[in-house]
Image 1 (cartoon, one colour):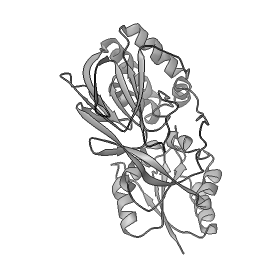
Image 2 (cartoon, helix red, strand yellow):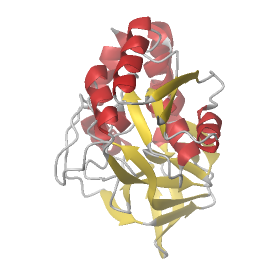
Image 3 (cartoon, rainbow, N blue to C red):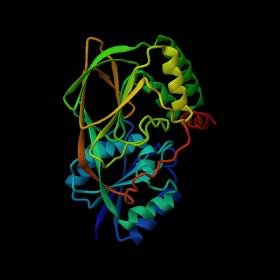
Length: 314
C-alpha cells in the first residue's frame, strides 16, 4: 500500500477541525493510501519535515495549509522525485489557485486521490527556493504589513495599515543595475517584481500571464518618475485592474541579478530576505505536483487585493 504523509499547519485558516482530519483520512484511505499526519511547528520546519518524508520513502507528501506552508514544503522537495499535493487550508491560497486546484477541501482531496501529476518550475533567490515571487524595493518593505493583515487579527492588521501609510510617505526610487539573462540595464525603480506564479501576497497579479511551467520568470519594473504615478499604478494593482503603463517595463528571463550602491530591501515568497544584491534564477520542472493539467491562456481568478484586505478584517 503506498504511503502518504500530510504535513499540516494547525494554525491555518481551515485547519484544526477533527471533521476535516476525518474527511482527509477517509478520502485518502479510499484512494489506497496509508496516511500519516505530522504537524508543522510555528518555527517553520516544513522544509526539513518534507526532506525527512522523502528520505523515509513516502510515495506522496501533502502540504496542508496556506501559501507559507506550501512554500516551505515545496522548498524541501525541490528536485525530488516524490510528488507534492496541495490541500488549500489558508487564507489566500494563491499557489492552489495558480495550479487550478479547487479550494473546496473535498474537491481538492478528489484531485489528490486522482494522482494526476505535472511538473512545475521553482525560482531560486540567493539559494532560497520559492514558488511565487521575489520583491525588491517597495513591496519588500511592505512584506511585514501584508503578513499582519493576513494572519494576526484585526488589531495587528490596523496597526499594519498605519505603518503601511508611513512607509508610503518614505518611499523613494532606487538606482540599481540589473542583469537580465546577461544583458545589463541601469534602472531607477520603486519596485522590481520577479514572478514565477501569476498570484502572490494578497492576490496581487503584477504578472498575470506568468506560468508555472514555462521555464521562465516574469520581471516587472516600476520606473515611474513621480511618486503619485507609481501610487496610481499600485492602486490599480490593488483593485485588480490591468492597465497599460509606459513606466512599467516587463521582461521574461531565466536569470536576473540585481545590485547597486543602494542596498534595497528584498522579500522572497512574502518574507523578508535581507537586501540587495540578489541573484534569482529559475529551475525548470524542478517540482512534481499533483494537479490538473495546465490550460494555456486560462486566467487565474481571485478577488482583488483590496477586497482580500477587507475580507481579512471582517
